[in-house]
Image 1 (tube, rainbow, N blue to C red):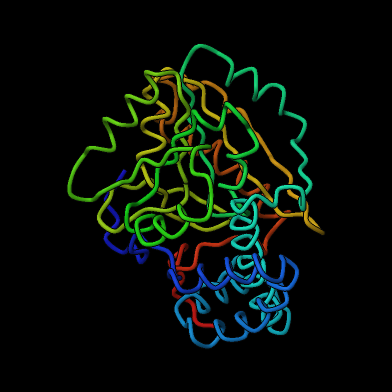
Image 2: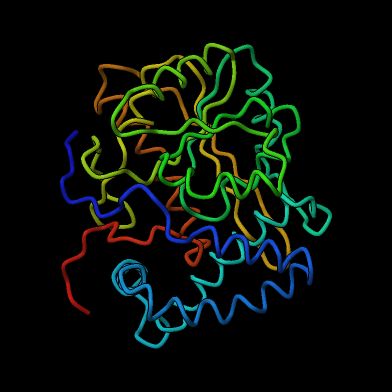
Length: 304
């Protein structure tokens, strides 16, 4: 474990209240597909005017996916467009347009529900791929027991706007603040209430503890917190990804983590991380354009 001093992500996601407000208005007045069409113009704007994100995506396409030059150019557009679609979908569903979408819950769904029905807390770990948060409203009463952990800077900026346009009752948020440990106690309290605590396992803020591991063939850093908690608390751990398919369809993928034994081989948190990476790599290889970490995740230094 180490404290990575090179983290480029600042704890917030690009975008603002104007953009969300505009698409909320567009969806209400003209519909989801018109919002998709307008998204093409937004993507053309973002490619040159979001240089850090574009450079990170370019390196991902060239150095991780090993795409050729022209395929990488097309990938830039496709990646931004998929991100925009997932944001539009999240807003549309929050506005009550669930009927416009179709959902597949995957082969492990019944096992997933059996774990949620157990009389204990559960840790779910996802990633900035697909549309992870979109699944919360579809678990009905289960969703009301979900606590999503996210950096306060990422949530605070738009929460008031979104609260005006959607029902927030289907999940709760545990904001992480860099200057206090309140979130740790809230996480513990939620698990003690037999609720579910949901982490994003692939992103950390500068100065926080990290674990390093090989991911997609190159060394990368991951936040230590979710894996330390998952290895030390006696609760089930599930890796969960919601991926956008062709058309207006999502598939939910659940991978049940195997219990790890302490004192054998890797540290428990590293063993949990290894399982997570295996699951995440499978998802990324099947949906490479739905990787939405717009910073230098692998710390590439090679110029291409």
